[in-house]
Image (cartoon, rainbow, N blue to C red; front, side):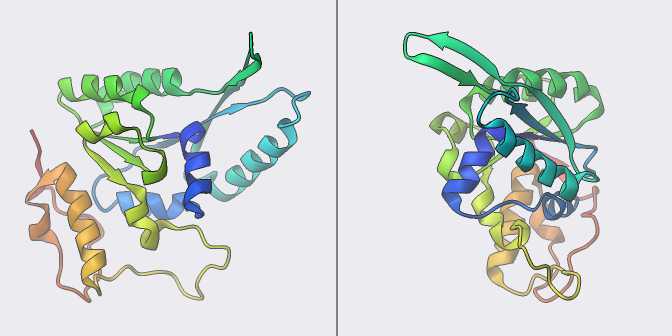
Length: 220
């Protein structure tokens, strides 16, 4: 399952100057495991907030594009009065932690799409329970504490999952037609499984629909 933290990814995508196509992302991840669900967490402002209209428009576009791929988890944005004025809080770490742990019995792999160090404790707890966990985040917004965990920079997947306004004339069929793409699959898969590289087909051959579980041995 994939847990997506909008609070972290929104600004990371802006810094990186490209956006994720979540349909392409699901297709990519499906090469490595069955994706049970992809939850997208976002805090929404009050109607009187100047940011309400922009946030609503952003969310509507996401729902229109990815309603069949993402399950949207919304919550009200918090407004806290401080000495420095009104502070807005839209953290999703509590909601993601609760949902991840509540679903853990039915999952083998948890992908946390965030570079926020608040999720390190959750990741450690998931691993103690014998499950796989991987951080998938932009290099531009990844806390140094995550370097001690299993993580993969989404920047390396740009060629595979970037959102493009104009789709290609025919459906994309990913081919291992260059060493760079092959190394991306090898690096990602090897974070999750031992022996993964043994299943990669020769360059120029289509990727399999699903890599065989007989060779994909769970990492300890």
